[in-house]
Image (tube, rainbow, N blue to C red; front, top):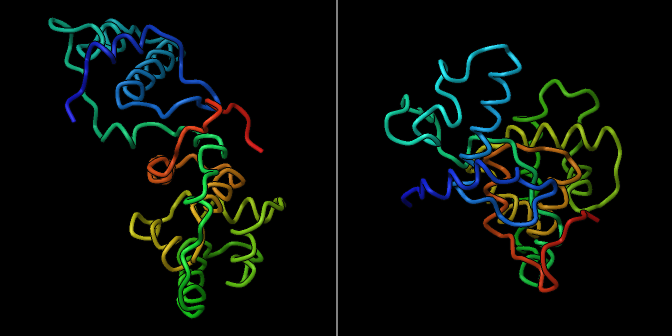
Length: 206
């Protein structure tokens, strides 16, 4: 989709993204937030934002005649953003788990553990990880393990949480929230399933 540069500039001079977010961030809002962060870091480092071409001093915000703003990756992978509140994943379809062979689930979870928890002290067994992914219980060990998984999970593995681990979208969203992960790829993948609650934007996570 083409970028609405006027919307980027409007977002840049507007309020920062809410935390927790009250709407799905647009590409333009992510670009604007990235420029705000660049400006803040430039000033914190004692550098000259005009010379660096940051924020309104670069072409993205300042327009033609300003130094070219270079964005080195897709907007969806620019920022570590907070996932939408859990209420955005609490609807009937998102509560339904995908059913399939138990063998698929055990093999997939064993693979996750080997690939993403190598060297993790006291790493869980596949049955234990299955329980963790489906429960709202919290512990430091569980949080650390889930954080490692969601921070490094491969793009091809994310949909397999549904098709092979037989989790519901809601369960995945809750596990991501409990983990504290803000990995851009994971959060962006999860957001494709987010629906605004009928009562309006939710601002608290249960």
